[in-house]
Structures are given as C-alpha cells and as structure tokens.
Image 1 (cartoon, rainbow, N blue to C red):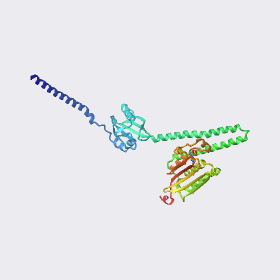
Image 2: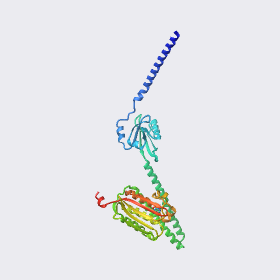
Image 3: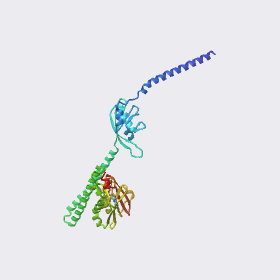
Amino acid sequence: MDTEVAWVLSGAVGLVLGAAITFIWKADEKRQIEPEAVEAPLVPPGAEAVLRSLASSAVIVDTDDEVVQASAPAVALGIVREGELHPESLVELVRQVRRDGQIREADVEVPIKRSAPLQVHARVAPLTSRLMLVLAEDRTQAQRLDMIRRDFVANVSHELKTPIGAIKLLAEAVGEATDDPEAVTRFSGRMGDEAERLTRLVQQIIDLSRLQADTLSEDAVTIKVGELVAEACEHSMTEAESKAISLRSSIDGDLFVHGDRAQLHAAVSNLVENAVTYSPEQSRVAVSAKRVEDDVKITVSDNGVGIPASELERIFERFYRVDPARARSTGGTGLGLSIVKHVAASNGGSVEVWSEPGLGSTFTLVLPAFDPEIDEEK
Ligand code: ADP
C-alpha cells in the first residue's frame, strides 16, 4: 500500500512539474514572438496619399512579400492579385533588392487571361528598412508599335530595292545595245515603267506615314460625295477604256461627308483603280453611294478575279499582295488597301469587303454622313 501511495504521489508531482515546464516554455515562446507580431511595418506618412493619387502603377510590399499598399492602376495592370504581388519574377526582383538594397529595373511578362502577356517594365527600390516600392509601366503597346515600325522599314527597303535593281539592269542593257535601236526603245520603255512604279511606291509610303502620324485628321472640310466618286472614276478612266471596261457611277441624292479631302480622294481612287486593275477586259465596274441611317456607304463592285476567303483578312495589311507575281505585272505595291483602311479610320469610318474568286469583289467605304445645314451649326 505504501509503495502504491508513493507511486501515485510521484506520478502527481511529475504531472504538475511537466505542466509547469510546458507553461513556462510556452510563455517564453510567446514573449519571443509577440514583439514581432505587433510591430506591423508602417507606410511612411504621406506615402499612402501619394500612392492613392498616382496614375501609374505603384505597389509597396513588406518583408513577407505581402502587398501593403497598391495604386489602382497596379491592380488594373494585374501585378497585384488577391493582395499578392504578381508574377513570381517580379517577387524575385523584390527579394534581390531586399537582400542588397540596390535599386533594380527589369522587363517582366505579366500573363493575362485569353490574350498575349503584357510587357511590363518594373523598377524596385527600398522605401524603408522593411518596405519595398515597386513602380511598373505597361510597355506592351510601345513594344508592339516598335515592332511594326521595324517591320515597315524592312519591308520598305525590300520593296524599294526591286525597282531600283531593275532600273540598274535596264540601264546596263541600254548601254550595251547602242547599235540596236529597237532594243534601246524597248529597254527605255521598261525603265520608264519601273521609274513610275518607284514614284508610286514612294508616294504611297509618304501617304501612309502621314496617315499613321495623326490619328484624327485635322484638315476636315465638307465634301460632296458625288465629287469624290466622279474624281475617282476620272482617275481610272484611261485604264478602264484601254480594257474596254464599263465604269459607271450612281449617287443616291445629295450626300456629304466631313473629312480630309486629299485622303478621301486617295481612298476612293484606290478602290476604283483596284477594281479596274483586277477585272478582265470588257467587264463592268460600278461605283455607287447611298445613305444608310447615319452613314454614307460608297460601294465599288467589279466582276473581276475575286479574292479567296483565306486572304480577305490580310489584304488590308501593308505590302500584302494575294499574288505577288501578278502584282508585278499590274504594278501593284500592296499599299493601296492599307491606305484605304487608315483613311477610313482617321475619318471616323471603316471599310468592308465581300469577294468570291471568279465572281468579283465589292469594297464598301463607310463614312459618317454629314448634314451641312444641321452639322455645321454645331
Ligand atoms: P496593290 O497595290 O497590290 O493593288 P492593295 O493593297 O491595293 O495593293 O491590294 C492588296 C491585294 O488585294 C492586291 O494585291 C490584290 O491581290 C487584292 N485586291 C485588291 N483589290 C482587289 C479587287 N478589286 N479584286 C481582286 N483582288 C483585289
């Protein structure tokens, strides 16, 4: 019995001791972590207000990479998602800066749903000993434009080289054929054609660059649609007559548009010129204009070769030609339709196309209708 009591007693003492040790240890542990937990990193006074009013993307993160503050554009840009900095490459950049205090810059890709990732330029700097400032700028559009510009310059150089090379070769041929007057006449005629092609190409490149420079035309005047159509038909009349193509126009009432005269003249003329160029002899080209609700629709229809459906998307691209071999014989540059598309956009309109190989094509230039009596008052 005595031994039993001794066992129970020693057990009880052990239990109490164990509980006491656990309690002290836990209390100590609590003491150790508590100061850390209460001392939340503080955003410097004023920084919060600055961040809120920023039009650019700025984020402040703490030592755990948690977002403490973010400007609205940063959230819209997608670099802050559910309170976390995003993507991982940006978080890694922040960690590097935290390690050595060196300000760093980098280009990061921010993946977005159902589209190509955004190209973001980020700059990370320490704000306080605990906080990091991330500044980000969306460069997607700028990089895209840069690429288009580089492509354009490469294409222009390539396209210019062809007629220049041809003129050089023809000049050599003329030099070697001095005792053959017939050959000289033939070669000089071809030189003239190439020079004309070159002139046309350079003019179209200048037109296109001007169009791309200003998004909305500043030289807007009121234009009678009938005059635009008559001038465009006049421009292609000789070519149409040489192919015995009947070129007809019909205008539905007194129609007006408001826009850049030279640009709109170039657009309608390009459409009529294409219709004549891509039509066989003795066919018909019809140009019509009518009012449809708030728009004026200028339609150019032909019974020519037509365009395969797979190419329809691409014909408005610069330098794009459905059949480059044929384009050489027609003197095409591949710039006409991209000029039409740009003119339409800079004058508040659009261009539509219907085409069927072997049946023909219909291009429609849609422009906002202008009512001189009503609209000029505004
Ligand atoms: P191009 O100077 O070669 O005519 P465009 O930009 O005007 O350049 O046209 C691009 C391509 O679209 C042309 O090469 C041609 O193949 C096709 N195209 C344009 N208009 C017509 C049309 N009316 N009928 C058939 N094909 C056309």
